[in-house]
Length: 467
Ligand code: SF4
Image (cartoon, rainbow, N blue to C red; front, top):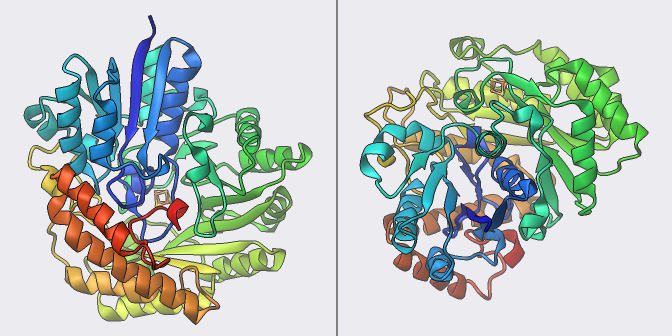
């Protein structure tokens, strides 16, 4: 008889982009529902082998299944192996959930994965007896090792099989179907604020054939957009050019979004990107302060060249999104102000300001407990010396981000930043104290949905499928 395997990505009322931020996760203050690429690819590895009976519960796209309902469903559905993907935002709730799953399945092998689990491995090993193993590597690579005994096998990973889940729920803000894949993993750079460096080892890239083949497989599902989740899409220019040419030659047509270092591009690659269907390029600028960048080993190109390439992308009809960080420990109001001026100067289509996240975690540090993470918050509770306090940093990210997704519309700006953000804050206030009381949390989320039933904007904790 085939072994039964359950892949679990729970849902607690918020949309979490769980393979973002080095797989520490990022709570979305938006209607975006992102797939988790490593999680889905891991399930695909088990499923493709033919030796396992695989079920994937990605609760956000299973009609927003809350934890009480999920546990009820599992009452009569016993598995040999359960793998849960956790995040910094949800680890408190995830642990409670796994404890309950252990009660239902005393014999099961219960594993937890994600960067938050890796950081807390020591604590989890000593304090969470209901967990059989903490998976430290990206779960898709773990799956390949488990099923086929291939180590460090990113390049051998198959395309994610989106049909294992209700993939039509993976909607972006505009309600388009967005699927993701990766042609490479890791990054040759070494920025000290980068959480990906804590999770992905080295830099590895798939063959052009494999990456183009994966794209074609995804296209069978007719997505409106394919987003490459590579950390540095064009790190190897030759491979990128070859991949873009292959996409053009095969006549693959879809909107592509990728993340890269814009200073590593040139006019020729931009033209190839355009011809291959690239609709948006995202890149990190981070700070206007050369000293800050130096402190974090962040090597950026000449800003006039960045401006030239940004303008050239716009000329070709490619949108741009620049990422900035505010609230570096040494940052003053004046330094943050200059970063804002730089964002104005570069004039990308969108800007995204993140609060500085202290990524210098000691992996497996005995000091860390789950309280390192704030339930449903995007920054850790880590205390470190900083010129600006926590409220000031949050305020900076909030005011600077007003241009995100609503460049030409005050109305959208109001709707997105003011209403959504404030609804989100209220939801966090209510749900954070209930993070480990899964029944009350589930009831409270339902109550909030009921209260907002007549208000289409009152959806801060709903995925887009409900809007
Ligand atoms: S370039 Fe980007 S992905 Fe690479 S280390 Fe720096 S922040 Fe991380």
